[in-house]
Length: 396
Ligand code: CTP
Image 1 (spheres, rainbow, N blue to C red):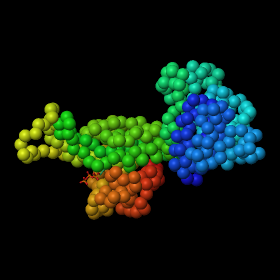
Image 2: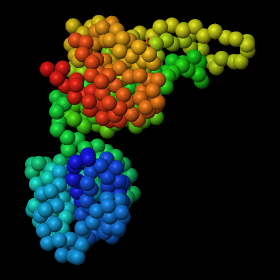
Image 3: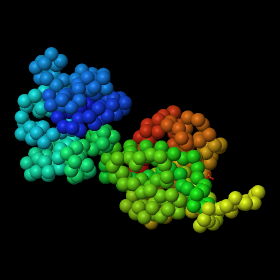
Image 4: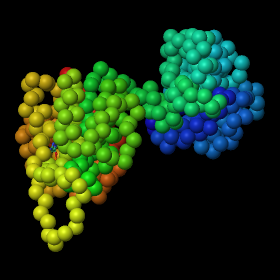
């Protein structure tokens, strides 16, 4: 979000405290973030909090000393996005009817920036026809309305009306700031390790954390794709917006992938699938006994090779990842050919700054026609966008 200007508009609801985290996330992502508050919002959280978090002046009084005479016009015209979170029923009504009686409502009325509204209120209030009609009117005006989540509300009732978590608002906002250049595409991503049980308490696995696959799924969703993520066990939260399938073993991953592949335009296999599994998985914990024990392993199915062999019957762009510790290019090229892929991303997992556990990656993109593109060291989020940029032309 480095070159983006974002305004967070805060209205007077108890969820105003969550806006502090939203501002922090936007600032951390590099957005130039400013905050405008209604007078009632300042009763819940002080402007000083937002000033400290955003590093920018906070405006809440149209005629106060803290603004200049044209801020209410220029703010919304200089910004890329305005996020009203939380948006009370009253503020939504004012927006829907063009009422401009304070700084925030006037600024929103004069804005040319994209506007996103996050309603937050008691569920009966939210379901009231007046509020629903006003939200319908906002949607017709081109405002993006983020549905509230359900759950326990501050008034001790349950139902729709909770402000979504700041991380989810942030993801929606990010998607609104991006060109939806992958919209219409169905993308299936696999991520993480697989675990192969030895007995109920032990298993074989590998060092994959899932970071690369999750970054790909997140970036694809932000760019408008419909994304399914099949993941082995990781410590990561499923990215917002993606349909998530949790699996453990290679066989479970194979089944989940085969079940979901039919309508896919692109399959990206970033998972580190265990090549072998114990021949037997003991029903009970194996007790300590002999000084030496031998574990017999049998080969797991190669999911990507299976997809590659059926490419004629179900055509889609197939992308693999090659994790190597030596002969990177030769091994990766060999895998691309053997598994009938359109592209393979080779990474040297012996480097400290690439591959497993790292937040950065150093990749080579290898195409079917033999071309190789050497990318510089990048964050995994940047790598994800680069990989998607390269995949897009292949989707025809
Ligand atoms: N892969 C797969 N099923 C397997 C093994 C690998 O789908 N049983 C996929 C991975 O998700 C990855 C690609 O194949 O996209 C290459 O995986 P990698 O572990 O680098 O190579 P392998 O084919 O397993 O060969 P080796 O372990 O000998 O390097």
